[in-house]
Image (cartoon, rainbow, N blue to C red; front, side, top):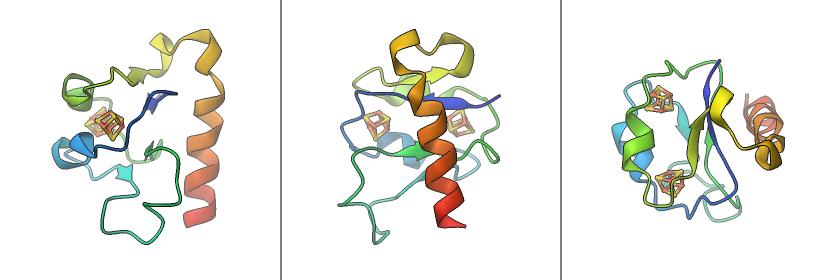
Length: 86
Ligand code: SF4
Ligand code: SF4
């Protein structure tokens, strides 16, 4: 299980700074920051600590089990993002 960034991410990057495992990308200094519509949590590196949830101003971060049904596609979007990155 991992936490998931859903549909309302505004790319403020507040979550990036608090994540203890550096699991949220792209960061503002990565080349694809501008081109990505959202940030993504690496499911292989997320420790499920939930620290990022409180930081998000748009309430976009959920545990996988709490992710709204109409945002389930974001689970696969994160997997695909990191598959392409590695
Ligand atoms: S739940 Fe914790 S480890 Fe996972 S992305 Fe959020 S801050 Fe990082
Ligand atoms: S804190 Fe929320 S809105 Fe900001 S980048 Fe992270 S997920 Fe997106």
